[in-house]
Image (cartoon, rainbow, N blue to C red; front, side):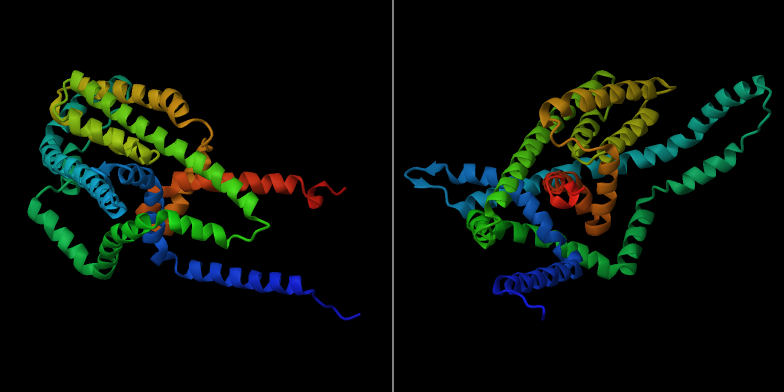
Length: 361
């Protein structure tokens, strides 16, 4: 008996092939899609604010949506510029001071460590001159050398730099048009879903929306609370750069591990440059230790909630995977994207456990 397909099976096969070809095309265009993906997720975060501004009235007239979109994107750009203006001057000021502090710091370290080693019967003579020269060479702080290095890198990787700059400019443009037509775009996508799958996909979309909404609102509160905590704690400890270091640490908390690590490094550098002895480092250890406990065991569980809770290994894998696929933007988007994948995986697991394939003995 010859093998034949019904009309419905033929249609399913055709659309399956179309879907596979579409996925292959998206995979081939992966590097080009990163600004669209970034704009999509940023747009999801900004859309409630746009809706709120667009609902305001100027006299008898409602605020035009394109004006609300322009306001939200402008606020986003100002926030990014403010973050850059906090980080760059802080780093440029601390690196030259660190270079100047290296020789006396190493002399103090040698004066403390060498007698202790001698008491333990370990007669080791540290080559402090070599260590000083190595560290000083690695932390070269001449502005001329820095700009020379930047210009040399720009010439060597001009194409990559231009591509990165183009993506950076492309994201706000895509974001504007996406936010302008956000609701019609969502309705258009919903009408494209096969009717037999629509209830299930809408249910999954609702769960993802609830999860991401909870994550974004909670994460903003965590960032604000930690920025205030670190700024106040470092000020009480007497740090001159308490405000920029504290605000930066709190803001960058949304990048798992990276934000806390960068803030900790800046605080350690500030302690080395400002304080004599180990008192500054002890303050940093105490403040950041309490901050990590506060974030991990109180703020994140209470404000973000445990629904988005992912195993640390999953978080590390997501950071590496999304960073490899989409660069630095991928690192920023790894955690919320992983939360979406976790919802999909939960539904797939539920269907698998209810399937005949699993239950057949």
